[in-house]
Image (cartoon, rainbow, N blue to C red; front, side, top):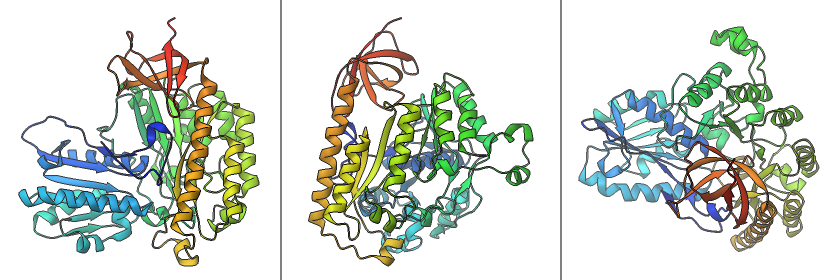
Length: 485
């Protein structure tokens, strides 16, 4: 399911002009309580919903793809932009009709919006019965009991230790081929525009033994790609003190102290298991990580490296802790170690506080230098409680923000098209993820560089690796023909 958004809000290529919303799949079990979850925002939210599904399954719930049939309906929310919260409020208004027909249905708001607004949500959205932050999902059974007793329930406690490492996610949103593995939670970066440190708490890393075990289990179940998730994966760290506290065997973790070490261990699970990761921070991504990527063919050659702005003064105001020169150095090193064909994507913010026209042009010039394959692009949306909201005036007129964003979008469309054009005639190994939405006679998969490829089905199925020669493209998709061995 996808919800439409403004083309001046976010764009990440022709195939990603819509904001993805994940909903739980139908399990088909009868005679059990029904759970419906709608997840918005980032991959971390989608991963969290799988944890919530696991916790609820232990309480006897089975999932449904229709909230009209649900005993419990959860919206797992995002607060990164004002529009994300408006979308959730509109969705609650839509669910209100079903709540009237079924007053016993429990409606809960989870995630970052819950953490930001806390009990205020119960006052503003009368149909909401419970509000739960990202670190309080273990408390859901108790909170539901409170609701059953006629009370509203809230738990938005932020933990310095919770990683849900011992909970096996229910992969209800998965295609059976690719899966997320959360390696850390929270964020210690205090970017002035961002609510994440306030809604997800301080940074803490998950124990490496459980990460590797989860990757191995996924491979044994037929999955062929994992994405290691964190707000800033490059700052993953594990210490002897943490090991002693977790009481793990030394042999399991003695070589894992940073993200490069963890990345290598996951890659060694099996050469047929592709490994991706997201998100990298320009201040933290190391040459050691890049050389580890180069060493293993099954570590995908793709990096999401958000820049936000191409101007050093604006970056300083954003508290990004790097400048334009540092970012360019990291990009140059990526291309030096991994080659010019390494996939690169980014995040861009147009119209941040006090941004001048010349500073906007610096962002465009950086885009021309890097030549991103795709970008996630926004105009600045002031978020309550952030450092920027407290320190700076949101002084760029909306029409200027939208015009600058349009220029960024147009340039990225051009760059994406040129990037795909360069791939025509090349051959790629593609991991098949499923059947094309436009034709049941075609399959789609991704290259190591994270580009979507569509090709004729032949005798192949999802989970297979195939070699494809690229014959054509659009801005967001490659088309190819199978190369049979």
